[in-house]
Length: 183
Image 1: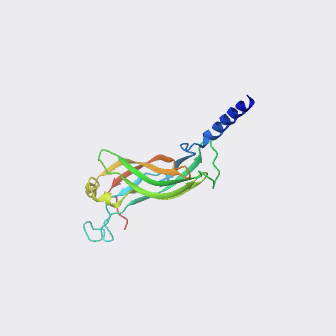
Image 2: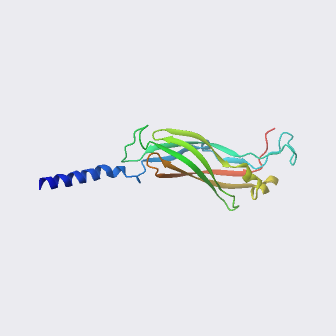
Image 3: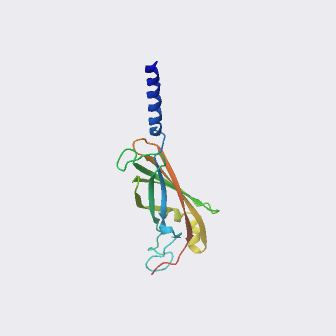
């Protein structure tokens, strides 16, 4: 009888001890602590080049990149040792969707950032690819006007060792216009 009780107690103890180690239990929380230094993005849809004259050979459009800081924290109730198992999340890609009446196309891009729990990762994201500015509705702004929108950014990654999916989001106000070009 004692052997049966000891076996049951051992089994229950093992189940309770391992319950926090299941493969579907994400052990970290990632969040954006800063994007574009907390400022809205002023996206210039067209640059008149060195000569300052529209429609000449030196005109161009540029993609808009912004700095971003990502924090990785340990989830409450978990124990993650920095440098140990489950301590790194690899951010594999991100998706940008624009919330506007103008139906500005969104996109997905790949990353490859490793963010360790207990650290802040600093990187740079493309928010508006140059090719996006060469299509409607943004080409209409070359002659004037402005679109105000929000870029909703969703990061997609996975936790080391377990492979569990991790997603987190942020947003950034974006103002599209043919801004005055610097001389």
